[in-house]
Length: 363
Ligand code: TXA
Ligand code: MG
Image (cartoon, rainbow, N blue to C red; front, side, top):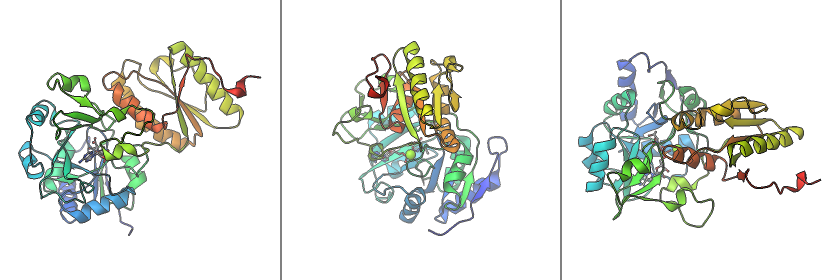
């Protein structure tokens, strides 16, 4: 892959830059790649209707090309150009949640190349709620294919500098709009089946959608620890958001968690490892480790979502060998938080309410 000069346009959250957005749009029309902010995470954008652009996206991310991309639009009227059928359920969801952090899966039209959909007959479509994203998509011609702007396997970028870290030299431009608002990727709902089904949890929760879609289902593989069932969103089967060190979740009653987590940290540090901790606000001073990241209070799940990927990236930068995190509620947006944490931890979870049976401690 040839090395590109990546133009980093900063400060878009404070300063509107019409010229940069026009240039970014032109790059996409010419078949190039531009990373851009959305309300969830940064996207790595290319022309969704150009098969070569999609190939370039897979190459820049180092992503398997059977993992389909999300097509981003900037107005509802454009939906029928990429979605062959728009079921009633989709109309209801769009009315309530678009623009916003919700992606829907439709039967695709012939306009959408198979390179963009990873060979599938369906297409994922999202109408983001972000001023820079919308202006950019419009300038780019209206259909921007974009996965999250991280190297495949790394945490999704929530800040421009993380996009630069992963994508410098691989894309033509980075539109930097500062820290994103939500911090975990959009909720994905498949509306092609008889009953709609959540394939990936996100900011728009099951409870929020269930109000208007009583028949809403959830892909059972979203939370399963193992099992042979294959997730319906191809990307969900990959090990994602993996920090370089090893992450373990400690669950259970708060006082048990504090005690057990610190014990685990002490064991690893005694062996000479660098150890990081993620703690809820209430437990900010409860731990001693090489790096302690304090996020929102337990009931402030939106703040925890916003901090999550940044904390994992910081641990990478700090060279942590092992990391331990408290477990959080899986209600509301907590469902998305725990889904991402479980993936980052490769499903390693310790129940602090159980007596420890680890041999190393039975002396
Ligand atoms: O918030 C977001 O959705 C961000 C921003 C940039 O919009 N994008 C994002 O894209 O998270 P990505 O590529 O990292 O995740 C897209 C997910 C993958 O798990 C993929 O397999 C699934 O959507 N997906 C895409 N098209 C699909 C389809 N036709 N059927 C089922 N799953 C699909
Ligand atoms: Mg991703």
